[in-house]
Length: 165
Image (cartoon, rainbow, N blue to C red; front, side, top):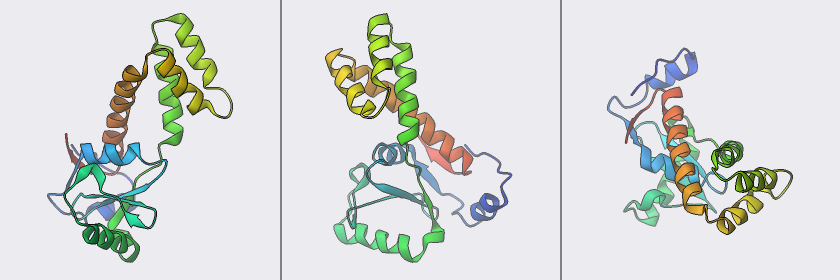
C-alpha cells in the first residue's frame, strides 16, 4: 500500500528508497511498543527496523542476528543517518488509546474508574493496576495491539512506505 506524498522532502527521500523495499508490520509494531524506552529507526534501503538502547542495538522481534551485526547497524545509523527514518515515541498516543479503551468498557462503574485513573501524574500506573484488578488486562492488551497496528500502517502511509502484514 502506498500513499502519494505532497511533501517535497518525502518525495525526494522516497526516490532513494529501494524499489522493492517494504517493512514487516510485525517488526514495526514491536518497535513502537518499546518506543517509550528505546529509539527505533527504519532503514529505507532494506526496510529493516533497527532498535537502539543502552549503547547497543536490541534484537527487534527476535531476529536471528549476532550482537556484532546489531552493533554494526547502530554505527550505520550514526554514520549514514539520512538512510534512516526515526520512529515516533507513542507515549501521547498511548494515553489516547487508554481513554478510548476506557470509554468502550461495557461496565459503567469500571469505565468511570478507568477514566478517573487517567487524570494527573501516575496515570499509566494507576490505569494498569486497575486493569488487573478489573480483569481487563487481556482486553486492553488486544485493544492496544490493534491500535498500534493502525498507527504503524498510518505511519507507513504517511511516509510512502510499503508494508507486509
